[in-house]
Image 1 (spheres, rainbow, N blue to C red):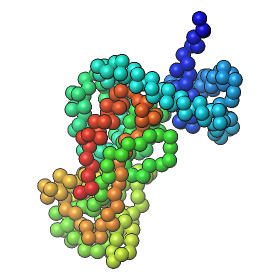
Image 2 (cartoon, one colour):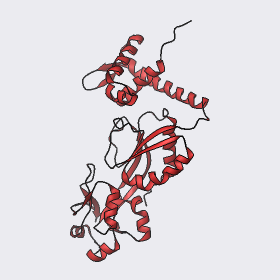
Image 3 (tube, rainbow, N blue to C red):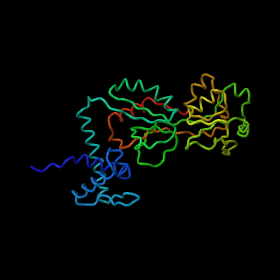
Image 4 (spheres, helix red, strand yellow):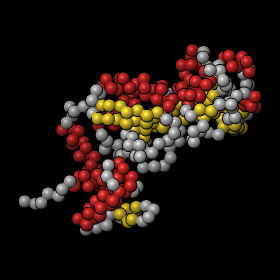
Length: 303
């Protein structure tokens, strides 16, 4: 009888993670191992196969032709294994801790209100929610899914688009009655323009007048660390804020906030994505269920 190799699927999964995440350290964090253990595992794998899979340097790993073929087949094998297990336990419900990171506006307007319904559908899942407008390192924070707004940087993460929302400048009726409603971008300079103080915040408000693109600097007397705090400051009548339309949709309908300079709105949108580690066909059931739930329920809109 042929000798059965120990945990070959586990070795294959670690190797795939090394390639997907671009190094031993990142793969080690994702797999709960040490970098040296991951490096030794890949070396043992190469020794058993009798061929080099990756060329190592101080800056990066590069797949050899043999390594590229092994990686591509490995991804398919792991996806088939996941599918086989899912078919064999099709009546098994998603379970376990699901750590989710989201920007604060999305968290307040979608994630927190929808959490009870998701947990009612999947009672064996425990949600661990962190809200911040700073972009986190998913691997370092051991996060399953992160919801991010705005352009995505190139990375080994997988992204699922949830929608796109237009941006709008708003103020309270009382503030506009006291300071006047700006009719041109130049008139904004006489207003208190509330800004964000997180790293990825735009330095100014883009507008368009007469076919010309204009950027109005944000130099108000208050800044905030997240979009929801900016909304609260605007609702308090402190000044004007430029926010995602989904944030202020109900406020505008209720008359609490009024949009201004809509004829100068350039029509730019902010895309919203759910990002996660791994191939689309190779995900824990709890992560897959959550991504499908977001796609079903979330409508950031472009209204």
